[in-house]
Image 1 (tube, rainbow, N blue to C red):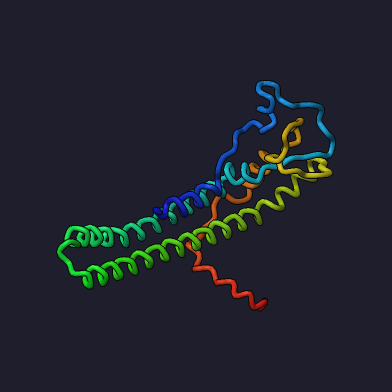
Image 2: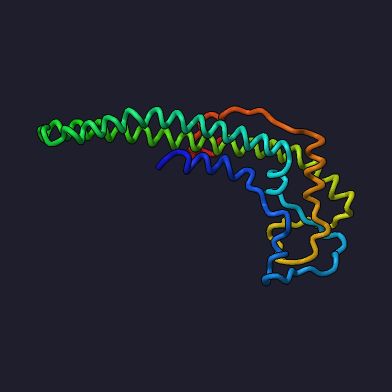
Length: 203
């Protein structure tokens, strides 16, 4: 498995852009499920905020960069291993049973080491993504609270969980504008390998 299937995907999911129209607009074919505006009921798409806010786009670009860097490191490790595997296959028939077993064991150990490296980099990138999302969420929270108050919201629903209804009180775009005015980028590097959960209960 190439590392880009496990890590590049993680980098991409942070900012998967959603369609501009609400999901309910496509319910039952061409007949959107609208209706009257429900006072005090508001909607928010966190995914749309991360996808459209400048700080989210900057974070996505940085995550992609880190994932490509990690992929390059894995590829550099894989190339000599692939070459040695091909060389072994070419001469395998001329080797003794003991020689084949020895070389196969060595190649298997190198393969396991590379796979462990790949998994470690995947965990690092996931930890990095989670930290970046947390930072963006911290910036967005007061903006969301301000929009919530200005729209006289009494309850806030996840827009992406709504099957139908009038989405006039969707505050996502307003939050994006407010977030853009507050911050446009964040800087971060790859997080270290997350500590293993030992289950010791130590705080």
